[in-house]
Image 1 (spheres, rainbow, N blue to C red):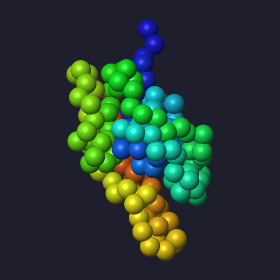
Image 2 (image 1 turned 45 degrees about the vertical axis):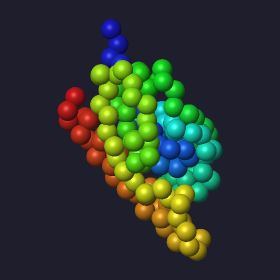
Image 3 (image 1 turned 60 degrees about the vertical axis):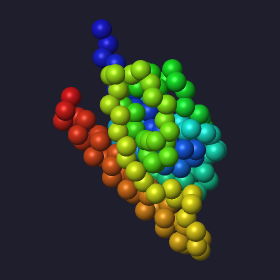
Image 4 (image 1 turned 180 degrees about the horizontal axis):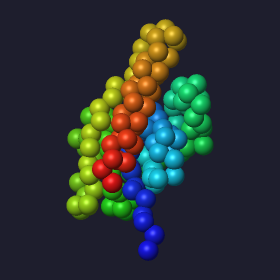
Length: 145
């Protein structure tokens, strides 16, 4: 019998920035050891700044789609990870006793204001924070399995 890959479902409000960045990093840093999907309470479309910021770090998320949470997919998840307070508070409660549900809060870079440089700096800051958390997740998950 084949070992099933752990399935990680990243959730955010709009599935345009933070969940997409987390999705991209886990696919890149976790190799093929995870099944990874991301979704939002709503689908706001893929944020072009998130795509550009990830490309700076060598990861292409330009083919990702912005999707709404699917209850069936949610029910299959081994890890349900929310990346914003709004999603954490409003995510549907599901009958999924096997899933570990975590909240990793990050600022929404799409709400950044200021000059182009300041907005880009905020996207980089959030990207780097998410990357660091994903690296920690991959390391801890390997040591616990």
